Structure formats: structure tokens, C-alpha cells
Image (cartoon, rainbow, N blue to C red; front, side, top):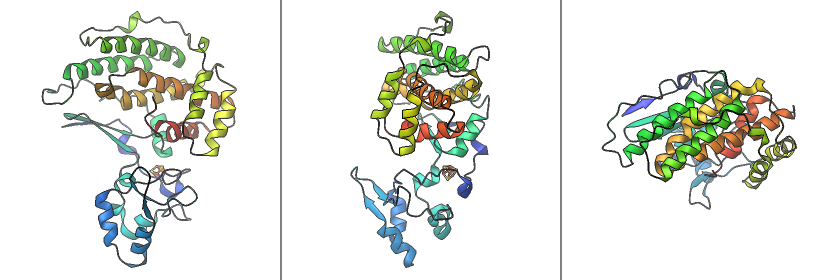
Length: 319
Ligand code: SF4
């Protein structure tokens, strides 16, 4: 099994009580079976508290009962009582792994961090050339349970998509416009089960038409998603009045780094879903919503990238 990591991966370290948010806030923590078995045997007052504060939710998952929208073990010093009382090794799988994400494609695994963690977002937004190792997989796909031909086609297309967003001569909105056209051509090949055509980026029109397209519906769509916090509801409302306005190029580098994250996080999932347009749509939506929120001048930049990920990207499979 080949494991591939972006350059920022090793640098990540949870900043615990220095974290401006917390992964314990707003989300229900799902406790896996193995950890639950250990918690059942935990003794003393802390063991009793652990078991008292777990319940089965409507999806059948075992979760901690949140208190005021936060994990009951996140203490007033912004530290985790389970970590303090039982040690890191007895955190549940969700807490041990977050914000690390593993994409397992049988013969290779790609490892990423989630934008929903402020420290991970800081690393991702400040690192260029982070995905240089995500290419040229000379692997034997014959034992995989997915279509190897499609996977090779997607890997080749993903390299070209990456090249669009790393071209320093292009503005972000032009990159996005070209990427949308390119993904439509790739999608058409997938729909026709034609995985042999070498689709060229040069065939895509190099005119920036993004801001001539109607974008308001993107906000209407986001207002219909499950919204976790009032803060996000307010951001969506104030940002929607800037829909379609030009987003300053000063943010282009940040959006290009964000786009690469979405490409490496989602593009290859088309080997199952047969859908590459969803990756392009994710980038478009994140750009329009975060970019419009930046135009309000009211919110801190990195925080918007995090909140978007926490509220939208991680909510459900929506694209
Ligand atoms: S969100 Fe990230 S930095 Fe903050 S507590 Fe969780 S893992 Fe640590």
C-alpha cells in the first residue's frame, strides 16, 4: 500500500486550549465500539460520568450528549477531560483522528487534513506546492474492486486540473472558469464510458465569464442546508447581498490553495460516484460564499474558510 501525504501534514499539531474554535463545538462526537467497550469498564466517578453522558442518537450512533452545543468533556480551560483523565490513547476514534482524513483506494491511500480545524486551515492556506507527491502512481490496479481504467483516467485529469490552479499567470476566477469547462468535458467522457480520450485544457475558452453568471442561487441553496450556528446564518445573510460582485485578486492565492484541497479531497471519489462536476461545484460554491463574505469586511479570513468547511463541507453529502 502506497501512502501519500501533502507537505503540511507532518507539521500539524493540535493547539488545544489555544484553538480559536474546537472540534468539540457544534458537532456530536460519535463513540466507536472499541472505545465504548473501554469506557464501559472505566471505574470511579469519571467512569460513571462517561457512561451517563453517552446516548444513541436518531441515526443509531453512540454519541456524547452535547451540553450547550459542545462536548460535555470539553472543560472550562478549553481542554479535554477524557485526555486528562484517561490519556490520548483512550480518546474515541473520531477525536484521535480529527482533522486527519484518509482516502483509501485499496492500493494507495491519500492523507489530508480537514479545513474545519483552524490550525489545519492555517497550514493549508500558507503552504504552496503541498501536493507535489500526489502524482505518477505507478501501481498495479488489477486487484482493485473499482474500474482501473477509470482511475487512471481520473488521475491524469486530476493532474491537469492541478496545473490550472497552480498557473500563476491566471487569476483565480479564470482558473475556476477553465476548470468548470474542463470538468464538463471529463464528465462527458465518463458518461460515455470513454476513458481513453486525452482531454486538453487548451480546448477550454480562456475568457473570465464567472461573474457574468447568476450566482444568487448558490446562497439560496446554502440557506437550505442544515445550519449549525447563528453565526453562520448571519454570515450567509450579509454575504448574499454581495453575490456576483468581483472578489478582489488579493485573495487569489488562498482560493487556489483551497481549490487544490477540494481537488485532492474529492476528485478521485468519482471512481465510485462517476461524478467529477461535484468537485468543481464545491470549489465554485466555496469561492462565491467565502469570497462574498470577505467583501463584507466583517469577518476574519481564515475563520471563514474553517466555518465554511465545518458548516457546509462536512454537513452531509450535498454536492
Ligand atoms: S479544531 Fe483542530 S486545533 Fe482545534 S482542538 Fe480540534 S484538532 Fe485541535
